[in-house]
Image (tube, rainbow, N blue to C red; front, side):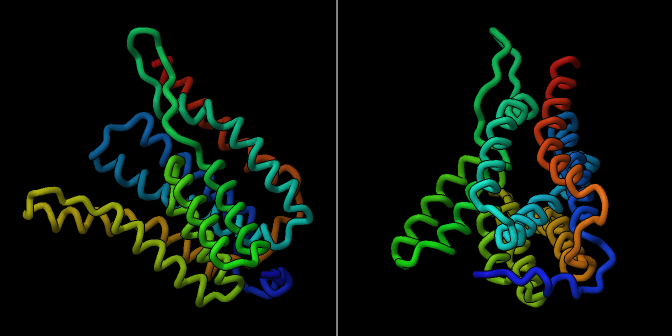
Length: 256
């Protein structure tokens, strides 16, 4: 499963990896603002949430890409584990703060960086576990564990699809199409009212727009490069932005 990063640099896209990540951070912020502050079911809520679905597939793609050219998989996994731990309190504060009795923050599952850590472990299993049956058992276990975290099951699915696609643009495109289709299916909830089926189908289709947009950006606009300047700043900004912005949203939510 070696990854030839040099092949990616031959792409002629106009966006480098860091610019795409900054876009992903912004769309994630919009999604989280909607989930924390807006009323579900409103037009603005739906638009911002759907735009935010751009982020997770991009994160999974760059995780799969980064796995193959990182100098130390051990250090990469350690960073994910540390920031998953740092992010857990802000994650619960932002999304599941309940007022009553004694203002209690309730554990509601693990955050997205924890999910990415599980995805990284799946890549390790795919790379180093030779026995097929054991590989399947371990990956299945990681999938089940991911069900208790943000973007559970879907993020591991995206990661496996991207890992198998490598730098093949056709396979990457297909990975996004498959992922968007699966995601849309999970968002289709018509209930018992058959008259609501068309609206349910429309809602499900619109929910996949962010994922499809991510696919367009990666397949057609990504040039396989990083920023020439500020690489270190960008690297740590992407790690710290997640817990810091969740903490800020959570504190604002508490104060208002």
